[in-house]
Image (cartoon, rainbow over all chains, first blue to last red; front, side, top):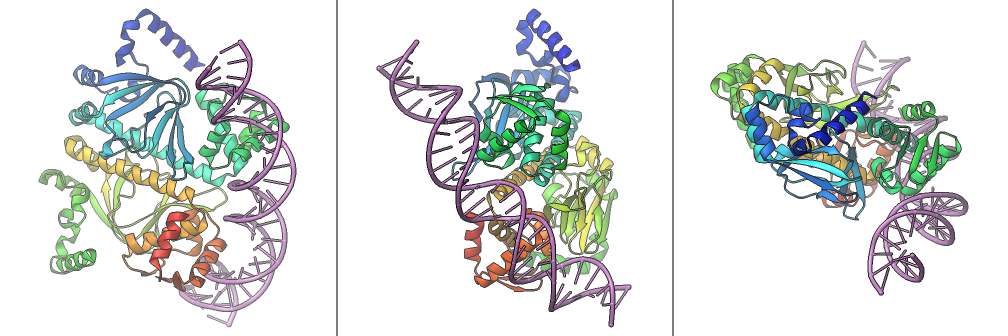
Length: 245
Length: 245
DNA sequence: CGCGGCTTTGATGTTCATCAAGTAAAGTGG
DNA sequence: CCACTTTACTTGATGAACATCAAAGCCGCG
């Protein structure tokens, strides 16, 4: 709710100062990471920054590409995924606005170990790595803040992986439905941003079994299904399935 | 082979200068991470440093404990693991000398999300976090080096997870045997440092199926089994099983 | 020496993947 | 905008991979 009010004010703000939308000085995500920068450092980042819009389905980065920018999401939804030699994808994570998609990997001086694609129309800020590193070098508080952020991302990854590994299919599907409802759309009704196959790729199950699980949830009155539109009817029961596996 | 010679020289060195073993100035792992420190910074680390020896089975850190030191391994073997509410463990990784066990997580200003236990007699260096952070703050090259190291660890984790998820049981067991033979013991014959159950906890399979797989490999002439001692007889075939799944 | 944890094998059951076949929806080119 | 093609979705039948259960031998250790 607070979030919605925030977004509303943000939108009003944009209307009035649309010139400034291209300057991240006014970005709502600024304080997530760039809080400690002074004006000069801020300018360095801002000058090295570009915005890109990707349509649903577009590939943002391809596994194997050299990493030469820091990315963060301002709008939309993306998936990080790897493709095996038989052409089958495995989705590592789904990321939403505010996430620093590649922060964990930009300092490896190496290439992307995964691809990134847009699941919805997505707005991404792209900061040249040279500039990012220059600021890290000149502001140790910022460096520590980056390290802190990285550690937290890593903590979450461990927790998430651990939780998934315990569960079998029903628990996994419940988990992703709750993730979308609570963390992404903040609503019990939403349009599924991924295909059934992609849900399978995310939780390591086949498309058919995802569909069967959806159907079962519907028969049990836990969700309502209408093509891509999903309504969670009994969130309590869904949470219980998520927890007990 | 080079590694063994290295160790040998290192041991000779210790004999002669045993007073210095407590000073990481002479640590063979020094350059892995602390290469860029000047003498003063070096002294800060060294003064905040303690060595601890853990026997097989001892818990080094427990999930939930506050993280207040940077750890690195000088000798031995450890496992990182999480325990679920039913008391079953899941092993996240097995780590060996030279690994920075908790580097990914020390900046989270939080608690351990996993436990660490010794699989063999293990020598761990423990550097107070305050000192570590002080040096990060005063040496941006060091900070970048830490970031680089973190990115690489993260890359490896992704690759490893991806590879494991593709494989079924034979491939997973082959994978861990090769890891032990090639990365840890550098020998085709070694004493398995974990129980069959722990192998299962590492690759998400039951004890019984690990045993069955071992037996099958033996019947096929790929390995020889003698209690805990394993000899890889046909490494080519084992590598093929690892690769093809 | 006896207890508990580790190892092993066999029998049985569950979960999930695979295969097949059909319908619905979403692109695509004329 | 419609015919056509492709991709997504759905259901059922079958089988493979793996978990679970049971029982017994082994080994180290107090």
